[in-house]
Structure formats: structure tokens, C-alpha cells
Image (tube, rainbow, N blue to C red; front, side, top):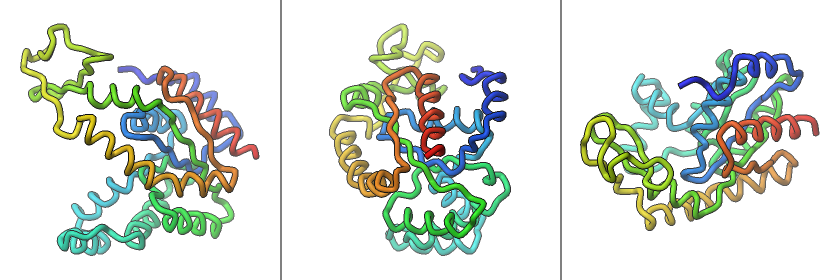
Length: 239
């Protein structure tokens, strides 16, 4: 599928004086954060940094940090902020982060946000973090999550509300019976939403108090949401 951002638009974005810098992209489960992040990566040619990916990569590569994290997880404990921060520090030292990067799943806590802000403040050439939250109403999120069905053979994803198969419950490609993930239920979704709100609210308020927070309407088409995020980042960078 062709990118939603044309080559001309990418060229125009590169010509702009505003650098994206570090961007914390927030969005509740089902808000489309992953889709938006991929488009922004193409648009700005900056990396997406996910702490989940960093953790898996460090463990798989057997790095010193990965071994320490594995030992913690083997005990059934959560990987501490200090260890996550160290992984992020290594990643941010790589040259592809100079113009900016999309932060995915980090910072999750006020401690992480404070550490990140302090690290960036110690590097005069770095722009501060700006946070943009993709807002989608609860009922729409619920339909996106509980309506998902996937083919166990080809992994094609459908949605009974927005993108149904031609024959109810049957994959258009394989003819296999579609399945619903065990965690794509209303009960699990409600719990995930409560956890997301509790986790992100302090971080949101932190960046809001600093004047570096914006919200974008995520109920609109993907390309419109992308444009809204770009405009929000430019507006925050101009402050």
C-alpha cells in the first residue's frame, strides 16, 4: 500500500525550518497510535523508539542491560525505571536520533519523564520533548477493539463494524473461520482503559504544565490526523 504521505509532501516537510525533535505520541488502546507513528516516521525520516522493542532487542542480543532485565523478569518483577532509562540512553546516543524521534511507550512514569527531561536539558543541541495525544471517543475505541477479527491462516485483520468480510465470520482470502483475540472483549478493554488513564495522566499533566502538550482529534481519517499531529508539533515548537 502506498504511503499516505506523498514524496512531494515529504520534500516540503524537509524544507521547513521546524525540526520535529523528540515527540511523545500518546493514544489509548485502539486510537491508532501505531499507524500514525509509522506515517510520521516516513514523513520526518526519524526513528520510532519503543521501550518494548528496546527491551526485547537487548534480551535477544544478550547485552549487559538485557541480561540484567532478563534476571529481573525471571523473578517475576517489573523492569525498574533505572534499567529502562539506561536502555533509552544507549538508543538516544545513536546518530539517527539527531533530528528527532517518536517515543512510543516511554516515558510511562513521572520518574522516567523527569530523567528524560534532565538528560535532554544537559545536551544544549537537543530540543525538549513535546507530547501529542490522539483523542478518540470511548465508544469508537470500543468498536475498534471488540470488532476485531483475524484470520488464523493469513493473519488478515477485519472489523465487524468498519471492515467486515464478505461472508460473516469467514476470511475473504483463505475461507477460514475468523477468530477474536481473548483480550479483545469489552471487559478487558475497560480494564486496559483504566490502566492507561492511571498510567498516563501524571505524564500528561507534567508536559501540560510545561506548555508542551497538545491534543489531536483521532476520530478523523488517518491523513487528517497525521496533518493535525504535524501542526501541533510545529505549534509547540514555536512557543
